[in-house]
Image (tube, rainbow, N blue to C red; front, top):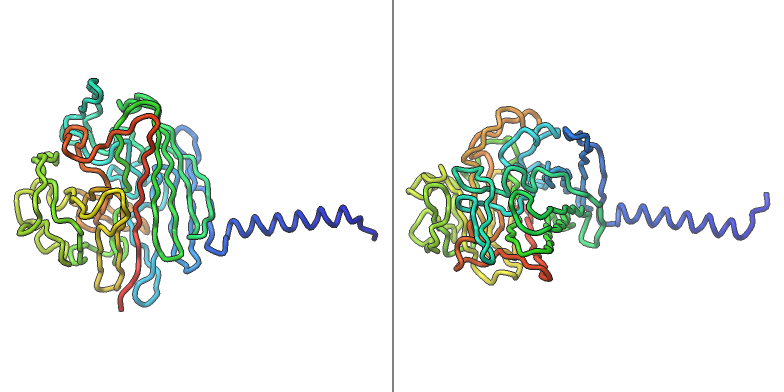
Length: 381
């Protein structure tokens, strides 16, 4: 059979193109695999994206709420274990009220009485938590289907999620365009890069609400995890978890994690902890906001797993799962009762729109919001 040079050239181009496409999916730096995760009540399909780095660590992320479904990292013996709470199906996410694994916005954490004033205009938001506004309202970013696009980078496999929040959505001004990129790096980091723009002045506080248990999800409480937080101050609150405006020194209080301390060592020690039935407070991180710096480290002695938190944000909410109550509906049928996981939510401070002395959360047209947080995993002998 005689084959023309043109046909040979065309076949070579196709073969090279297919090889490039395979390389882009695998990238020599890991893989991204998409599969179905269920259907929303309105008929939209939801996908789960499995990111696997070249060392074998794995993150599974759905485009409903941008939730991290699972995160498998090695222990001191190299055995992979899933260190985040989650659900095996979409129904679990639709029926839960704990923001498990999700992206949070437009405003993470609380705004007092659901009100703030911006440029002389008072805005009213839903009051969905003890008379205050919490985590974006009734239908925050945790309850929408994001547009997803798998990516490959030199650092590792990645997933880009985008969402356009219309002007007036949940009471917030401005049409906001948000992009979030999750990267599972080949250094066993889950890196989260946030980017947002608006066409009208608005307030914005994006965060991520994964619940961690470094011994493995469903393995019991987290009270013996050893925590260090690089913060010399925190923001005390009133009985409804709204900051008083004070930046209080942690020294001499149960909030002093400047040295490694068991999470449960002082968890019921004073009035501030009684307000939230445990830790549910914002820590004022040391160092310069806007620069990537280490905010915290958690060590789990039985597995040797270590998680470091690095961020450009000025604050971080430490929450000890005080109100968790998942009765046997978690992954693998696991129950998630109170204090079986912790959250370290990097952020601007709660209720910042009503505290001019706090770092500003105002985003204006022509400006760009950018933020990075990294959860870095390793293990000690």
